[in-house]
Length: 524
Image (cartoon, rainbow, N blue to C red; front, top):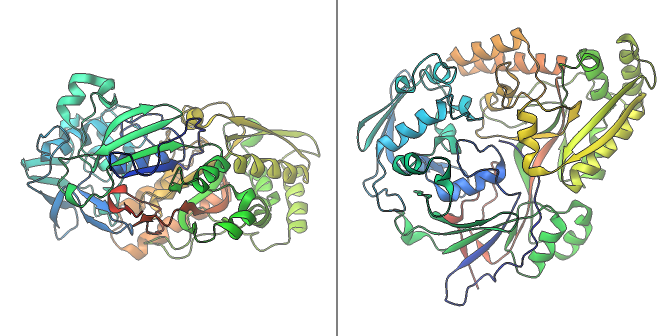
């Protein structure tokens, strides 16, 4: 999932407890969503919202463990290709309609319908016929998702998929209220029209200010939902969220101003949460540009980047340097592949980078690149530092800032750039969720527009391999090839950096950084 920047808000939110006694949670979020249509969402910030508005077949609890959602139980066939989900009788939509198996059939077909143009459609490609449908080769009705009856859903896969249940916790696995979507079309996400089945329902959305959600009285576990109203407030300036946090105007910030790390460690140490996170901060390079099409040029740029400096000085220890794309500790893998110069001295790396550039036909000052990034101080400081590092090997680098709300749409639509900042947060703990980004036909996330038949074949081979150890080896071959060609330059692993009030009970640190409001309460 995309790691996004934040958008500033200027209005003053309400206090943590409303005067009428309702429990209100003012929650700092990464940015405003570009949409509330969960088939069109792609960022972490949007994922936070969807997690509160909807409930899938399975969900992640406070510790990110998979627990029953709309499905109270399920079974898998012996060959691992057919899942049968049994839906709870008390699952309802916010308008009182029952949640049925057909709501999932409708949603999953819509996700694959080419007319929807869902950027995340390929996350469901393990489902039988999904890819063919998304490529207009089959009709949506041929998707391997069938309602046996109102409370029984059968999903058939192309082959065994060890991460399938985790995949269903993603927003692409959520149902849709068919009647609302068909009646209102694109306007089904407006507060007056939106029908959801999660712990909360949408009350209002004021861009650049606040998204208000109210507890859904029809939610099957409503009696155990302690917070009545959650106000999602977007912050571009992390320091602003810090000030609001200290004033007790927000109870959590989804990120922290790293330039004030010393201050926070001295004054807010008990509120700081810096924990491992399944994510990679990286630089896609537009490989279709003639001057950047040579892997030697891209490798030289990668060699010149001092990742330790970025992690320790720019990010103040809130990031971890990496020479791998797949994060360490991910499931079904082992140790990731590593760039061969990871342990080399920086001066030696710079000399080797200059030599590579000369081999590729570029002398000192003969190559210029533009480093583009989405708005945030941390991103700006990172790209400025990288520009200086590239200057050490004779590359002229300049930086360009873009507003966060449109940034990833620009990258997905093959916008004009040389090198950009991107981040990916794992939707499930499996290397496929990181390596699939670079498949040739993944135009939604293959920002570099890199095409490599061998890589695509390795990813295809991994899909059909049922032995987990053999599959891990195939995926590692793919990552090794990725690091040889470096269409994307991995530089940092994420940590989840938050401020959490001691009044907020139930926020559990976890590697997925998922924190559904339904699991929390507020103490006075």
